[in-house]
Image (cartoon, rainbow over all chains, first blue to last red; front, side):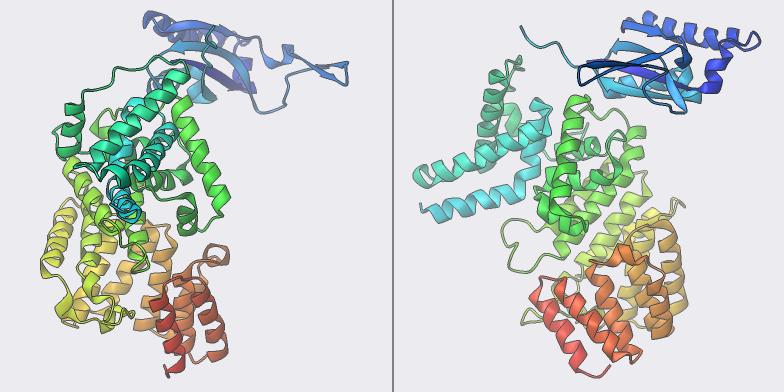
Length: 119
Length: 409
């Protein structure tokens, strides 16, 4: 089964990316985590994202486009990246989620990916 | 054979083997709701076919085969690749061997699946009761003091989650079993309590729920011999089972513990309960079920020999309410305080329980009635009595509660 691991991070952790003293450790942890996923042969795809202040949110209401600066919801933890993995079941997906850097300081939502409809 | 006979045979099979059949079907469907539908189809088919052709030699095997065919039919229609159906001999083996060495019973495996941490905590026990014992949502809802539609919705959601999120139907190792043990034990105890409350005469078909619960507890003890709480639960249920024959009088009337005829108690079960509790205590890891079993053991001793110091009993109840969030424990503690200290102290202890939790909890109102009556507050007592009577469907309990008001305390 495929699962998307959705990594969310608090604002102060996003700030580490820009801090020369903290950035190497921050990126190092992610590189080694994603490396382990790739090495295990379970990677389907995945990306890190620019921080939430770079987000733009779009809605169409009554045919009218509404564009807004910032992420869709103003909450303490924001989406920082995701990875889709192919594993046997939920328990394996939860094990991988627990190993991620954001499990320590933020949270990881685990969602099964909808299978492609049969053609 | 008459329609009535077929119905009786079908109901007996349903009652005694529902969980065993469901857990075997789930193995191939990996979808609890689909397995339930298939099993329901098989029961409907049995009611149609058995009156004409007679009840098969092994009703369970017939139901299993029919349900598997129904489940396979659905899968083919959904265009999903069908797993190779296991040979019928294997099915018979699975049904007849109650103790294969790897995992003693498919039902127990399904219970541990229902206790997965990814499933909403509040629905784990209801889900186990439904899948293992075939109880309907309305009955489970009554036991958990929630509305039936809300309970149905939670159960449906949990089954969908298990199917779509890919919760494993294999239970990996002992450490995981121990993590989920608390929920499994809670469900077994809930089943026992429901069976204990069964209105006599109504649930006459098949093995009583209480025996099913005891059977499951024995399996858990076998599976996890290092888990003292499993032994504690078994000891607790055996102590109650031992008194089963004495809890009703000759006319089916309700007999409170203190007035029971101890000659009707089952000595063998009582001894087994004591041995089980000692084995649990030897681990030095206390828990709510061990405490409850110790309390039951004291109750039994006090009725038989009458020299149990009340302070020990009250202390155990104090320990229990710290270990267990159950309302039943809090109510029983108040009753004990009322009996061994004073009715006023009992009432004060009862008042510590948040009102919202006891609104529809029958034993609370029965206890309140009893304590108010002892305290001489007769007007309030009558109100509590009316409430207690309105919350039970057991005619013997109604008669007992009614009689208590008429006679001076």
